[in-house]
Length: 594
Image 1 (cartoon, helix red, strand yellow):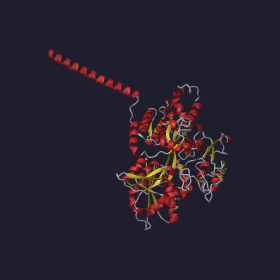
Image 2: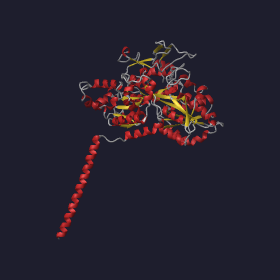
Image 3: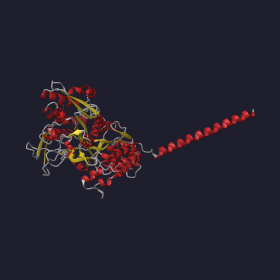
């Protein structure tokens, strides 16, 4: 089996964060040849630190400029938002989620990147970003082009802000990583812990453990995938996200199951209508979601933000609502025995994790870069110039692939021009064609990724044929890389629709297949992936709903025990007082007799 991920420690980042306030004032004057400091704010454990030093070295070599990236991290989008609001530290770049970009644009806290997208400063991004995610050619819009942003544009006669709604996310941000929210699970552990609960049901009682495991994999990928989280046989084996937005999405699918279910007479055939329903946050919907999540709470092991990806590998839990990148990471850790991702566990020691997107659909999310709004003079500064250059550097296909291999998430780069680095990485990591595999090539599963990869010639015309010889992307030289693999692939436009058909051959039960499903959704899943937007004026009510879910009344059995305990204590106190009064009265009577 091939080593897919590189496990690098994030070195020096904490020190850089500590130094940030000290060096922030030193970046004001670089005309004398001083160091140019670029302040970057990103989520924790989300970037290969070698890219920071690599960028600094490339600028020194190409421009003769000394640039230092001051890299800081945050734990949640809301923490990042509060950090920006305080204004105690200024940043040249921030990375956050799609809904937060909407909020920042609405509050005029970030500026447009349109100028840099138009003048070629971000050519790596515009050349290589997957058209599925963003498009700058005027063709069919990608996902970011479809997400609206509201930009303040004056006030009406009553003093209310008027919003310009003709803009979209692709003008204010460039993509970094993207993925889905799905179900990560360990079928073997679920059966081991709750075998009796499964076999208490007539339809399961005669199944072997292996058959139950196969059924669980089928069930979590089915129309009823989310609904199984509420079933008794999964009680106590699962954790859910301590994130109101992500867990709210699970509740939406349960409340409006029929409208997302193709097999239902109530199915909404229009994607936009389903996406609007996915974003429902009126008072009635909030109450319905609150009720189903309170029911779900009785079935879970607990809430988590970041520990779930560890707990499922160490077998504390068997089911976790997970972001796809964390799922990819956990699947790898369950397969490898060492921190360097080189030693494969013995088969009996492997933790075989699966990631599923139920057929109802899932949340598709985007983490993107934006530039906090500054004064006009800033945009002519070296800080601004090299901040944009840093973004362009991150979107070089090799750097994007390297970063993806580090964090397990999926890069926005889709090899749409004359570079096949990311496709090569996917083929090297996941395709089992001609590999020594017990399944045999003839029995491999076909996994369609045609929606994501798109190749054009030097004139911008779609290729009708692509030949690629796969090489080890981490080899020291291209010759060594080719020697390590060397398989040859030809992709053609099978359907005559002007687009190459990119199909990966894999075994979906193997480590490679399970990792591929986590890192890239299949073409058949795309129509059921929905973008969650900012809740706007209803945000406070969503927060209140979430508080109610987390502090909901205790289960009935707990209430009974508490009432019994309290009645017992009160009874004891009453008896104690009665006996005490009797003894006092008796002592008084004895004294009177004397």
